[in-house]
Image 1 (cartoon, chains in turn green, blue):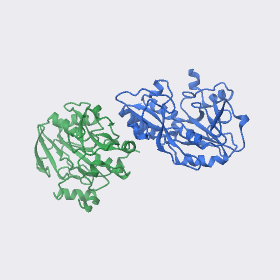
Image 2: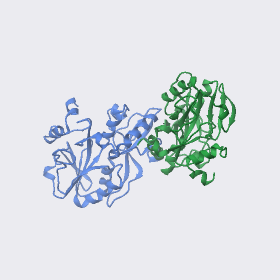
Image 3: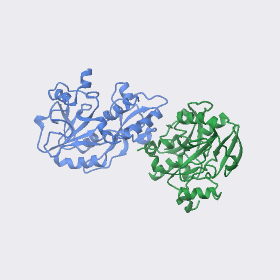
Image 4: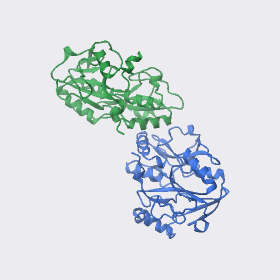
Length: 265
Length: 265
């Protein structure tokens, strides 16, 4: 990625996205600003999903949503954000099956669609890096390793499923510091949910990821596990709503909210 | 301990101590108020010790000290506190050797003595209990297990030594919560310094404590290690000042400062 993309304002970055001049992974773009996972559902599924987020705030931290069904502008999250055009890549699902991947959803928009935007780990990774901690998936240029845990989410209507967790190996002292830093950011998954013995989460082999890539774990490190934004996608795949749109993995909505604004302390 | 001792005001409790009607361990007395480790040194050793505390704030969190050599009143820590009489039991050291254990030090007081009061784990244990966490040494009615770690303190003049750590076993999720809670209390040792693999601290057998008692560690628990107020006592034993007075282990100075006042957040 060239440096100008890193330092673009969120609005200027979204302008590129809107013209389909940027259709990729948004990791590292418009640095310093909150990026969000996107879920778009018909109104008759929206209540169940909202309740699922409410009951499971660590994996599903809601940072914004449509005020009314059919609204495609999300001005609370940024100037002129049009969810139909301002996400680099979308996935279209019917009955839980992926049927298409597209760069805008203007032609698919319906008056009954409700948009949900959920916080993502990019925000807390930025805070950890700023503190001088190493993040293995970033240093090894991989996707973060993710695993389906044995922690059951609280079910809500038609949505249920186990929590997906992301894992970052760290020295114990860095894990303690990471807990302090991430505790300030509850709306981007917050503090880790587990550390140490992976088998207590039902994970038998950390090299065998369910999503993302395995990363190196050094002898003196412990695995540290965070609630992960893939959790709602797994719940969606299980619930099989007749129609659903999400962002493509890694291709997030970039908002105008500074990451620092998410800090509760 | 009878309940009335638990609910006495700090001033009323100190009045008992002053009359030698209470000469024991202060764990649980005057609940809700800060208790302190006590170190009293001749002025020509005070600078080195103050510097040692300054350089090693996690094991040696200074919460109060004499304004001038010879002062025995510590009014910043509580109404009418007279350090010569208001600690239940004192240990007297000469050249690093324990030579006596007494209930007041009026006859030993000198115009060149400087008093240091350091925060202790009772304050953060109270905060952990209030949050519903189990503290194993309390549930098993033992002294907390302590170990001399391989973490070298920063040396200061004649004072040096390795950090002593206390250990409390916890489920990972409780360890994460404990890190959050203790981070609010930097003046009573703050966040843990390590968790998980004890051998990384040079501790080979958790059942073989250097101070205090071993406690049960369950299969699904990890040991969590905090910097410990025994650290300065080890540094004192190594430095061998010609004269030194400390509290007897567990028999702390009870101050008028509410534990909640120590919270930085």
